[in-house]
Image 1 (cartoon, rainbow, N blue to C red):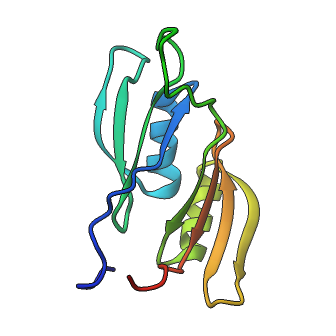
Image 2: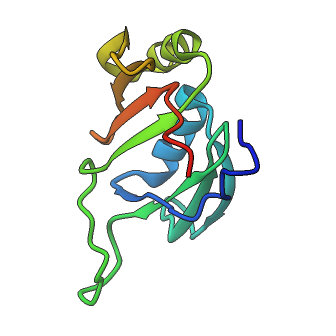
Image 3: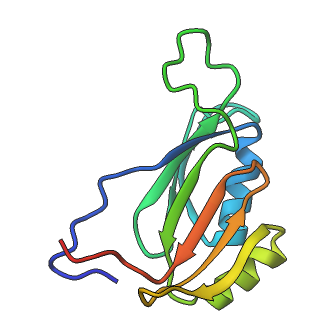
Length: 136
């Protein structure tokens, strides 16, 4: 949910993956992302963009085959992100059924958010919560 004070997302978390195509499928199945674009041949993903269920999104690609001059050499499994979600308990159930490692099951925070933490098959950490941030 957005309002007139909430700007369009302009920060794009990015990550690299050992098996980017499998990670894309997992993020769609487990967390409800939507694949917007994916460029590359065969198993290799040069660039992919996934939209978040409530807005925003991430960009990702394959870690291998980028050459020695790669200046964005992120190691697979080193990413962490907070994602706003509405129904934490339903998303937690969906993620668990899709094989996400649940690091911390749903819990309530002292600032009014309901959260849970999961790890994807590449080792990245995902925190989902209802806290939308302070108004800008």
